[in-house]
Image (cartoon, rainbow, N blue to C red; front, top):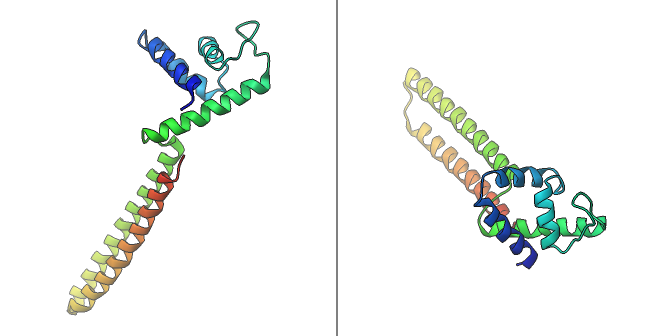
Length: 158
């Protein structure tokens, strides 16, 4: 793992022990381009060997961008090791789950309607049971395929 990345996090976590303010700054700093919070930017420059003449500027913008890209890449690897997923992926999974739950509810309503129709007409349940078993098997196979795709997507992340 990248030593500058580990040094940055080590010093950051020591600073976090001093108060919640650093956590709030870190969140804002990562969301807004890594340059807004002076304390964190100074810590970042120090850990990644980026020396600036004053606290508000960076002498080499290309070196800054390379350090940010390296930090982001290492952070993504670190997050994957801990099993963290990006918020967008989590939201996509929640949306897929909600869609599946809606589909299941609709299918259950259809099954209830079909049962009621069969009961009203006095038809036997053997055809219904065979149809339901086939439908449930198909639905189960589709759900397993979806879950396998999601599992592979999470396992393929760096």
